[in-house]
Amino acid sequence: MDLPVYFISDTHLMLEASEQEKARRAKLFGFLRHVRSTGGTLFIVGDIFDYYFEYKDVIPKIYFDFFHELYLVKNAGIDIHYVLGNHDYWVMDFITEDLTTHTYFEDMSINVNGKSFYITHGDGHLSWDYGYRLLKAVIQSKPFIWLYRWVHPNIGYMFGNWISKRGKHYDHDETYNKKILDDLKIFASKLTENGTDFVICGHYHQATVEDVGPGKLVILGDWLTFFTYGVFDGNEFSIQKWDENA
Ligand SMILES: [Mn+2]
Image (cartoon, rainbow, N blue to C red):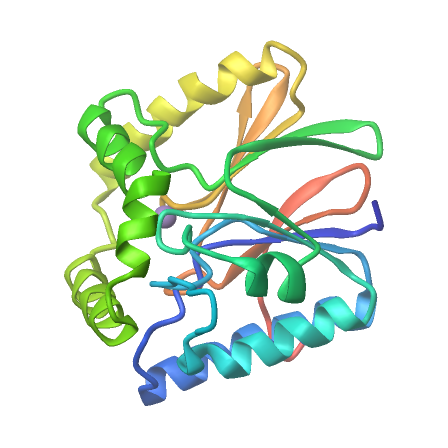
């Protein structure tokens, strides 16, 4: 795998092109151009879109500028690994064949330069999330997706937009963030005690690298308030804040 390996998650590209959204995208495209200029490998760790649902012959045009920038990264010969999130799970061959090199519908493990990584978007791993895990099993099931695909795309996206507007509470208070972090450390410790060096996740809208047993737990932050990405140079992993002037 080509180094450095970049990790990004939770850009939550929105279905409405407000000025704020355009500015956010400009930053993201700056980052993608940076990846293109250094070379390496790119991991997208889920929720790149706030809502994405692909049909056999239909893709959403609101993301065209992003599709274009990502396509340039791929065309530069950079492998793009996409671990799907809970907002962008419903992909088809446009994402899996045209825009990325590898797409993962589940958590995945991979060895990079002698270090082992466990990479997950992160949703569904909290110990108390029983109801969510059941909902996830249903909305990511083949029968549900088959049925939903027969709903007209206008209605599908109207619903997506409604869900996306309802779910915009990504800033949690410190007590809740700590509770989540403690629980994720328990999840990660089971992996690090069995030889995983890095457990990488997104989803929780925190940016941190934590020692967990002999390994590390990484939460990548997001591109709503943090503008962070992970980078592994072959030895060390760090979280960086994107600085467009650097
Ligand atoms: Mn998520």
